[in-house]
Every structure is written in structure tokens, then in C-alpha cells.
Image 1 (cartoon, rainbow, N blue to C red):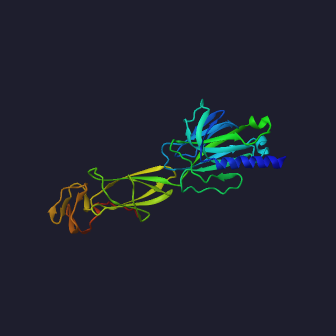
Image 2: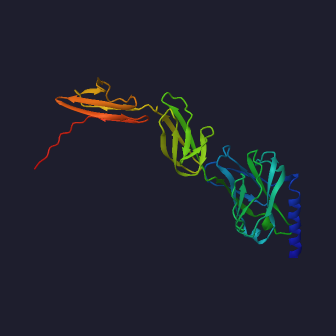
Length: 328
């Protein structure tokens, strides 16, 4: 008897595999739905009976989404009746799944019997680069990418054999779905000058040149070194923390490569730059590249320094007067 049932079940699944490229019309008892997030690993659950379906709706932004992980809690009576229930996944399902809609049309792209386990995980790839898990009876992976142009993945449970007890048909499956996210984060970079104009620059990540698309690039999470270079401006270097499935925004304002100097001194100090009176203190001002002399006069004291000014650097000349008191 068991061999007869086994042959019947095998023929059933062979028939499903052979006809999965054709659209079919089918009826279910009820359709449930869950909606996934595109940037968190939060799972959403639903309870289904053997003749029910589940629509897993996907987020609009799928930048980080590379798959879906379904966890099915299988009642013992279903697990004991091996190959009694099948899980199928469809493409091109219409109409859009709803709680009151029971008649559908679609093309079956995947079918498998539920295993003889109380907990089973199925991973559904959504990208070509998806790395499938090793099929060990508890975790299985599809080798087909479903069509998600309509924004959802549709799966259906159905009886796969006759003669099973009513307890199997009345069983409740707890199904949870969660996103499988890429191990990537986004760097969003804005580079402007002091006038607020966008500046085209060479971008380096960890000393390697990169190209940004719309000011964005996907990176492996971790601390990354960002370098922005432009011959007309000073180079900017930042350490940036990239988080998985998150966007890190960096806004840089580039300064001119022309060198600057800031001079400060106590009130009453006479200042000379290259023997010309200097009156602009505590403010960054441009200075030409090359050698310069700065001289301070305060009371009867004079102090002179020579400065070798280099392009792309800022300098500070600060005259301080210290008073030291000691006790012996």
C-alpha cells in the first residue's frame, strides 16, 4: 500500500514539474498576505490551512533585498503523513491577491512536498548573486528566481495525495517570512565648494578609485576611508562608518587649494607681514605661496619669524605672552 501511495505521489509531483511552464486556473480557500521591509530583518507571520495561499509583498526600494526566507512550522500530523502536502510558487498571478479573492490564474515555477520536519526553512532568491544555503532537510533553496514585477511572491499550499485523515486538512501551518538582505550599505556623498556649487572630484575608498552613481555607492559594512581629490581644491579625507542596509550621508565643502593664514596677537601689538603693516587679525585670509616674514612689536619687544608657505595648507601665527610664577 505504501509503495502504491509513494508511486502516486511521485507521479503527482512529476506531473506538476512537467506542466509548470503553463498558466493554470486554480481555487484556494483563503489568501493571506504579509509585507516585508527593505532595510530590516523583521519577520512577518501568517497562519494558513492546507488549501490556503500567501502573498509576500515586497518593499518598493529593493536596494538591499536579495531574497526571502520562509520558515514553516509544520504540524506533527502533516509531518507524519509524508508527502501529503505540497508547497507551490507561481509567477504571473492575477488578480492581485486579496483576502476575499479565491480564484486565481498563474504559472507554477516551483513545487515541493513538505518535509517530515516540524520546522522547515525555504530560501527564495530574488537576485542572480544570491548565495543559496546548503540543502540539509531543514533549509532548502529554490534554484529559480520568481518574477517580482508585480511587487509580490505568491505561494500556495495544497493536498498532494488522497486518503489522508481529516486532521491533515484541518491542520494550521504557521508561516513567517523575512527579508534576506545584502551585506552592503550605501554611501551618499555630496561635494560642493564654498559657493555651494557641486564639484566634480576623484573619489577614493580605501585608496581605490570608485565611481558613484547619482552620488551613491554600495559598500561592504565597516569603517571605510573616504578621500576626495580635485586639483583646484584641497584634498579631504574622512573615516566613514558604513552600516548594513543603511545609508550614510557625507556632505563635504571643499576649500580652495590657495594657502591661508590666520594671525592673532594681544591688543596693542603692531604686526608687519613682509614689512607691510598688517591689520587683519583672527580671520583666515589668503596668502601667496613662498617665503614670508612676519614681525610683531609689543612694548619694547620684537619677535620675527620666517614662514615657508605651501599650496593647499592653512597656517596660524599666534603671539602669546606667558607669565610664570614659581615658589621656592
